[in-house]
Amino acid sequence: RLAPLLEPLGERFAAAGHALHLVGGPVRDAMLGRQGVDIDLTTSARPEETERLVTGWADAVWDVGRAFGTIGARKGPWQVEITTYRSEEYDPTSRKPDVAFGDDLAGDLGRRDFTVNAMAVNVADRSFEDPYGGVVDLAHGLLRTPGRPEDSFSDDPLRMMRAARFSATLGFAVAPEVVAAMTAMADRISIISAERVRDELVKLVCAPHPRRGLALLVETGLAGHVLPELPALALERDEHHRHKDVYEHTLTVLEQAIDLEHRLPGTPDFVVRFAALMHDVGKPRTRRFVDDGTVTFHHHDVVGAKMTRKRMQALRFSSAEVDAVATLVELHLRFHGYGGGEWTDSAVRRYVRDAGDQLERLHILTRADCTTRNRRKAERLRRSYDDLEARIERLSEEEELASLRPDLSGFQIMELLGI
Ligand code: ATP
Ligand code: MG
Image (cartoon, rainbow, N blue to C red; front, side, top):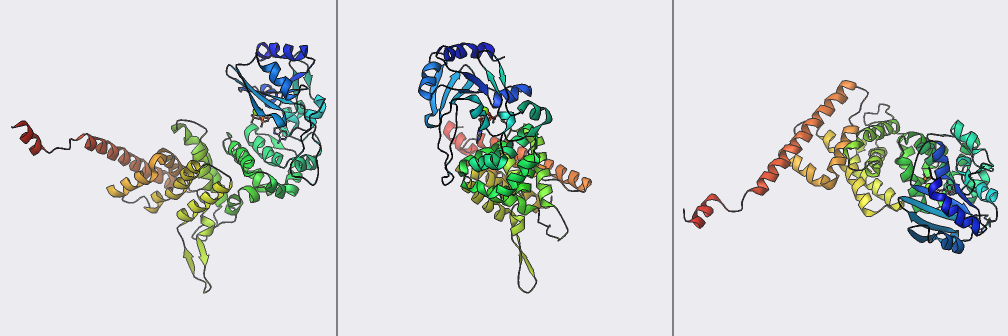
């Protein structure tokens, strides 16, 4: 499918004496029968030469990170990134790898994250390179590192997050030795910038079935560093001190929210998904045991919204994203607070006003949270939310009519017209 597009580019590189290979995501995804618009290429050419060779073929060319060897280009709908072979030499005392350009493809593939991402196709002659057995792992649905996982993760701890992310997006299992290395080295993630961790977390949460990736984060202890509120839920009991697995409940709510997501304009919707993940994080903090054995409760919605803000700010989310998710976490309990009972018109108005432009997401989150082991009760809750939504609709229609009403009274109009 890509051959007609890439062949002319391959010829340009070949004429200059350079190899050009399709690599990573597009090779893996093509084998899985998926199509994307991202094209990753790797070459022996240095960035300056890559830039020269790609100019004239692409519609636009730019510098993604020349120091790291990456030139970006667009051709029609295709987003192209061409990176010079890498062969890093690591200074064990330094946090940052010194980037060194390499001369051979095998060396470049050997420093990639997983074997399924370390396969390449030569653009010139379509020959296939798979020095680390990526095809076999792909067939088994298995994530393995090309070398020892401990060495790979010590070179770049972000790869541990990527293991969880790919297990969610591809639905693959992670090899036992890789899980073991992740568990042993989880604390190394702390040297990685919050932005890079956040980007992987977003991709994980936006996967079709994020459960597997989240479980892996919790199991290996990585979640304890990047999203500690999540494993804390597993220890929680409900307010009546009956056992209730809030962690399991949270994953169920996330999955129900994903089922309802089609109501939103764009999917996957990170905001509603992350709100589902965080909706009950205030619970572990809402109970406070006082010395004399009595227990006090705090509103866990308010506590949860605060905790959500803090976590999202630490992960360097934009303030718009933080506000949106925190609003949902705070408001999702209002419906249950009324116990399905009577809402006054002004309570309905306040609900709509407080939700602002998060109203549609709030409907989804609150409905997704209408789960309990008691099916009849869940059904009753859902019907009661149907009623609330219908009232919101009616009320906003009435308000629209009201806004159409003229500012002048009938009296004033008669006076003006001399009637
Ligand atoms: P997708 O683009 O669908 O998210 P991808 O596999 O293309 O998946 P990218 O993040 O675009 O992932 O990276 C492109 C390729 O670069 C990967 O397939 C992998 O070979 C390599 N790579 C990216 N990040 C790392 C890393 N931190 N360590 C090692 N190799 C990496
Ligand atoms: Mg990619």
